[in-house]
Amino acid sequence: MSNSNIDKVPIWEKANLTIKEASEYSNIGINRIEELLKVPGCSFVLYVGKKKLVKRREFEYFLSCTLEI
Image (cartoon, rainbow, N blue to C red; front, top):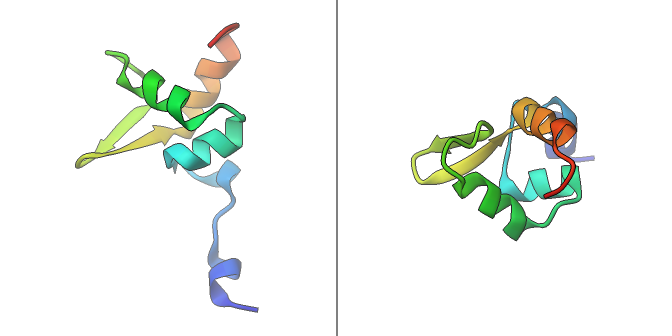
């Protein structure tokens, strides 16, 4: 067994997700999540340099309040 599997944090415990992780977590396509992150005032985008991350808790709240994407 390798150490990388032992030390890996489960997606549902991470504070921020990559776009790919957010896609897997929510079952929403990568392209659609990228479009949502481009919307001005998006509450769940976090910029780390040029990289965009998804704030998991805010993303979950957004999904719970949204009927259609």
